[in-house]
Image 1 (cartoon, one colour):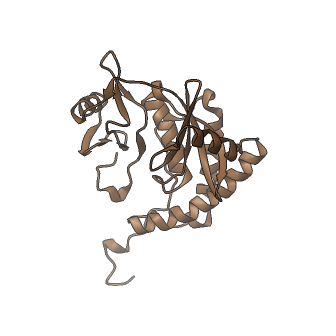
Image 2 (spheres, helix red, strand yellow):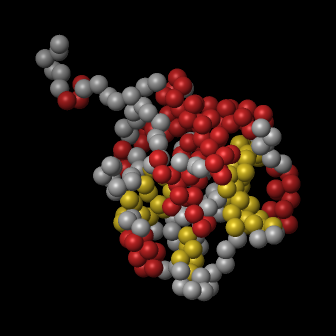
Image 3 (cartoon, rainbow, N blue to C red):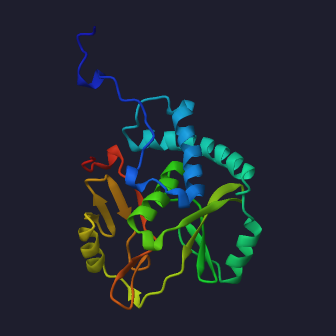
Amino acid sequence: MSVNAGADDKPKKNYRPERIPPRAEPKAAQETLRAALDVVRRVHRSSKAAQRAEPVSRQERSELNDALRIEGEVALRKWATKNNLMLDAAAFTREWEEQGRIEGAEHQVYINKGIVYKRNNLSYHGNWLEYLDRLALHHWLFPDTAMNFEGLMEVDGQLQAIVTQKAFSGVRGATLEEVSSEMQKRGLQQIRNYDFYSPSLGIIVEDLHDENVMIDEEGLLIIFDPVIYLAKPESGLPLP
């Protein structure tokens, strides 16, 4: 044994795919989401890229995410094609363009008969498991505004997800004070601006500004487009 061996020489923990709280696992009514999660979880368990130590820095996680995202897309394309879940990208684009090309950083959106259709480019997520976990966590934390996973489509060579959500209307956007008060009731503490954290669950809920949270006619908050993910070790937050 080397005389210089110390704490830094301790074996690192092997990488393990993140798991959302058991209570947040998709139910039978979310069968498409459950099946897609199974596909990407298998990738994370079997990928050669994942047969290494748990990432401890942003750079290490970015490198792992790049590999897992590519492998995840290959597996998801195969699964979606087999199950007729590769949807018509041209039809979505026509509807989106006819309604004025509504979009944000991650979504392109159109509305049909009270249902919002969203096409997500995964710009807020490092890999497909993070994104699909987000949908499951949203369904659990904010069931009144749940986003239903409908399938996938190819957009300019990129695989993108399609979700639907009931259309909501409010009298105004929520203030930060109103959002913070509601999040405290739900056990989440403010960590910066519009971002909140649950120490007990290790969940971060971000982007809760006045375009993603509205106040309805009864004064209640409608939280319809949060960004939710599991806290990472390098976040510096006290993980459970």
